[in-house]
Image (cartoon, rainbow over all chains, first blue to last red):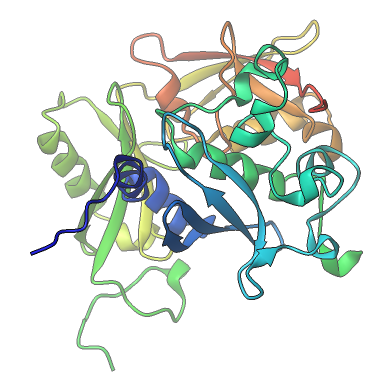
Length: 159
Length: 179
């Protein structure tokens, strides 16, 4: 009998998705798991106006290596079109959900693997935002949820 | 018609009854969040005793519901306090936690229940410092002497222990993320 071997990074992520911290976020409607096709993981995050933004995570090497994620259109299976990116009032939301960097494939934030790897000065400038393996994917989801629920986030209906 | 006779609290409206309540809780001195399911008829007093027994806690330990100032006790069923069949609670020896927020030359303080969220503390200092919602959104509570900025849903009780029952924050503005 052939038994599929689950790689350790996938096992670690699955364990974190089963932790109360992630399940509480689901129970409170802050985020919801969509799919896993290792190492790709789709998770939706809810904004203050109940709009859901899906993140496409690449979790290879998790948790020692932090994930990288970008906004995703799960229906078209492509990067979310820029005209559907979160609207903002010119503050913190616009700094992270950038349409003018890397084609929108990663969030411009020190917690993101791709973003931190291209900004050598960020660990010194943003120590509170760095990826922490012990906190896991909930850390990433929490900062995205906070952004989508802060005063800089702009409801699309009011645009 | 449901066979389950459980009567849900007023907050549940016409939603489907939950035979069990999901209880997410944190215990002073224990890392991470914990979870259990309990019958929805479990009273707050019973839930406290259940948690005391489960974690071998001292009898004086108190149970707090999220963002409630006073300890949760009495014969009220958990279902009366749930949202979507779930409650988020905190088990702590401090009956109140003193919060000090350093901002410019001011250091106002206020006492909260251990289950109070960072978001609730932020509501308080927004009024205390007469900040507009836009300005408040640009500031974060950072635990004094650390780089730790707890997420909005974090309970104050995770940041201190009895007998200190004290959390000191610095109110800091965000450093713009740029290349």
